[in-house]
Length: 91
Image (cartoon, rainbow, N blue to C red; front, side, top):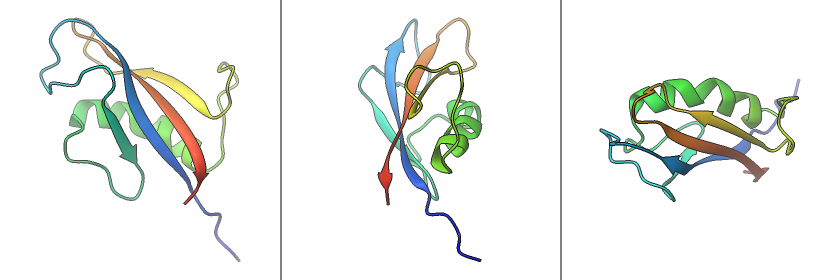
């Protein structure tokens, strides 16, 4: 049985308020897949990973207008960093 080829998923910071202890700022981008940048905050990674996995393997979120994207916030409510996850062409 052939395995599906995963999509590439990029997490881009689209909003940041307060002081992010990891130093993330608007415009930062991180690839999430078989390997992920060590510069991505581990708390953000753990939050983003389930959403990125859905996008990586062709799933979608019915509440998103663009089925190739998902908007996800890090878990720090006092200093929120908001990421846009975007699926792109197959690797």
